[in-house]
Length: 226
Image (tube, rainbow, N blue to C red):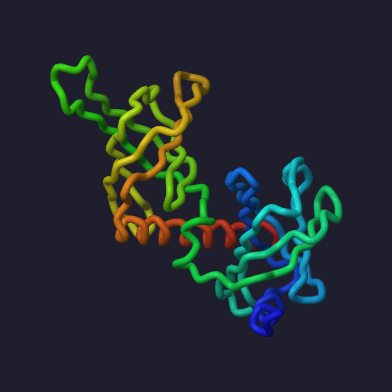
């Protein structure tokens, strides 16, 4: 085991708030807040609130941990589950440090912001109507976005998405496909989109917003526990 990864794990204070993204065998990602607990590095424990560990969790799930060191600097690394100790505690072993710019396949964060969806039929002879929906995002990554819209998006073709990112404040417009749509109460629709051909600049802006939101959530978690 690399001395570097041992030093990275040892740099995290005991009882430090953290966030772990778990990826199951189907590729579904779940992001959970937790508390880092010291062990014999590179091994460590994560403590979760009651009822938050998924019932179907497996040791084979890939994990990415985000926390902070003693100086308050962010730390991110991949880890492997070694023991499902209880319904609130799992034991892991750190494997590899991850740079923020390499997180695009792992990182999804809860982030509320305005979103607008547009569609204009290319062929006027086709029986399709232009659409324009407004809504709010639920979470976002560099591969897609989950949103709550004012109407059902029945379009199976690519649509235009306009996202008003908060931090840094930027507006990006890109193409996306509807992945799933579920009706909620009060005629609202939970709708997920997969991004198509997202530019490098747009990816970087989304990543920066995700990191800013993650830092804010970790800070709020620390303040709640102090």
